[in-house]
Image (cartoon, rainbow, N blue to C red; front, side):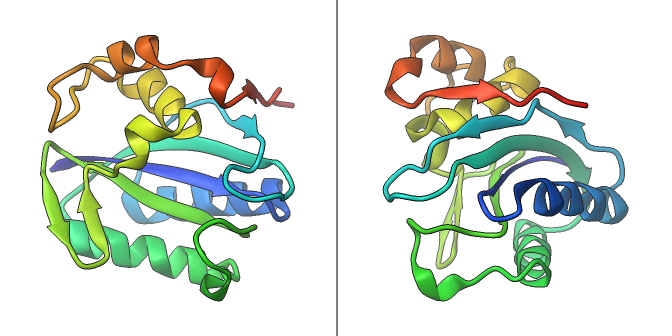
Length: 161
């Protein structure tokens, strides 16, 4: 079984789409390890704030199969891919890590570069996989987060009901 980490983001009807993604991922993959949900400002464009989190799961599916499942869930939630990378979205599911696999093929890059670039990916990943190591740098995700400037990309936990 491969240990996989997936980032989840939404800034359109956030509660509905995040909850739906969590339910669908659990139905397909079983038990999820979930970070807190964080609210963040849009990065790279002007838009409504996002909800972001990371989940860990185990699967026997290949990375390509997992990526296809994630794309299918996005599509089922009305994801509009015509607007470009930096735009509002109903749901954004990104395969961050697949064990310690390093992969660079069209449409699938592991580990995702966003891990070390964006607080809204790194902080929740470090929260649930702090002792895991980045496949390229060998540094623990908790250590990478400790070196990150959190003021550069403000974010705050969403209070659960």
